[in-house]
Image (spheres, helix red, strand yellow):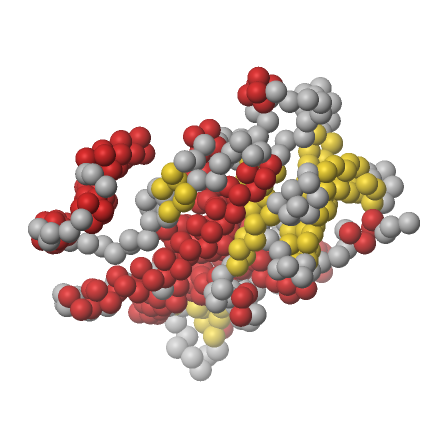
Length: 468
């Protein structure tokens, strides 16, 4: 008898090594109070009362999310070209309303946060014969879903270099009946090259049982896996871990700076010891037990008074940190932020206020462009594989020609137009002139956004206006 319980325990070595880091990265991306409570550090000289106040006051500049989304926005700032793509799938790639661009944005952001991402290309379950009318009515067509690496717990590759099987963790919740309590289940689905099997933890016994089984006969596991070649591809940690740690440092520094401001507004009272001894009321054991009896605070804390001996100044007064200390913390945070963006490779700002030279600007733009182009290659190949799987599920779906934008440099429009006019004056064949016209369309889009339909019409006109 097969050990189904083992399927809920097993993990791929890469998954086991990185799951703690992945969870921390996901929490940093999510942000909010839950992450503040996890990332805020209590320093040695801080009492519980003070730390509780600082934690309640804390706020989080979510730089990890900004960086992860910023890369995605740059990469997909221009819609990829999908010649011959099924328009229904382009508008609803996930079968729940997400367009193909939105699914690829999710996939890109997962790749930024984890350094690894998966895409599942699936088909709805159905029984009986299927005809075009039923296919249209029940929307029986393949769809793609971006999946976190935390959901794909184990996998294996065959001798041909392709996935042999993969184990995907799922959480399903049956709430179709509004008058019944929803039933939620923890499941794991085993995908092989020709079938799938769903295993579930029984709610009453806690044992693992096989619930469903089906065949797909694709000859391949319908999962697309992408990793950053210079990260896990070289057995290295993902750069997002460093971003999270720098962001945590900014969170803690900013929290201390905030409390310094509070202490400047509400200074710490210093009282002479002689005054304390003369002012302190005698306390009986009964009064010590009574919470409502008068007390005199002598706890060393931000919110309580302290006293000093006669050899000190002997003058009651308030003390507070100087504004200089707070400004130093803020300066450090500004430097950390600059370094954080520079580590990722998307920082082009110069610390100097002087104008950049043309060579300096060109180098900055080239640096950013190469970073984004390497990311585009991964996304483009992943989407092509998704369409190929859709074709395996339904041969009526054709694999389109997909081309992602690879021009990210910030250009001077006047210089670009002058350059195009100069290139157009060169005598060459029809294909050369068509490419010049297509380049002009790209420059036009930097001035005014063109709809996909209008862009297709313009490109068709360019293709038909010049004889081949």
